[in-house]
Length: 366
Image 1 (cartoon, rainbow, N blue to C red):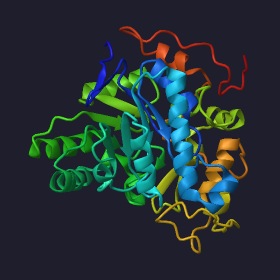
Image 2: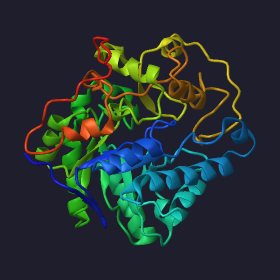
Image 3: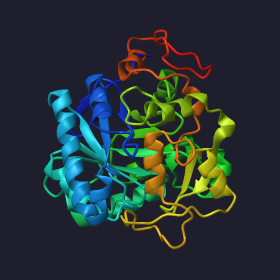
């Protein structure tokens, strides 16, 4: 099978791959630009970019200014090549401001999840930007499409379906996550296709969840998807923002090291089991001071830990205190390679042999 191009609105990429946003500071300009140059769609995660001290006094302004700076840097690194987008969580307290900042920078697409992006088109206005909601059910897509049609007379330009096998925040109950077969990607695709038929819509549909190699991508294309979003595998590309010690945790991880906990966002979140996670599961509360008020859904007086601090610690590679989000395919992360190495495996009719690893699960270094 030769992988098809991905076409969304007036955008096109050589490979049917969108890079997941991956905050905090993992999906930044170096990774997004590398993905674009290799033939995919690159994405900057909008959360947690600001200077830590400056954010304490002006979180909104710092968030917007640093996102704009990161977008410009990605444009510089790619020489203006497209498609470049941003991922903006609905749960952010500065959601509207950050969306407007991204629109002013004329990004090519905006991916939005962790809540339903009902007002996203209104914040974007007349800018020519592809809007891509992230959903976990046909019902969620129906709510978005109905609202967008009524309020703005437009439909999404594509939709990403996140399955129960995804990493990060999950739009499923704990019971559904314990029995993922009841909400499999095949079931979700059928729901979404039915909703799209009801609206006479033919927008691209992308799969997300436990996709880490060419074989996985081909399987999703055969199911009827137009493309995929990849997260966990891309954390361990050389250009991702995470410290190397953090990436090596993923390479060493086994399926039994993956657990689901409740996030301050108000959703379940799938993560690697670390000392921080052990303390949370034991019912202990992490001491923290909340200067940012970064999430609308977070009650700082109740939640057991600060997700902003935990993700910053993960970005630094702090295995003791970091929160390392992961999908169910962590066993597919066997090596740290360059973005070009990964995309080389997607070329041609069949996948060529993988590049020699720089770090593997066996601990061998190049």
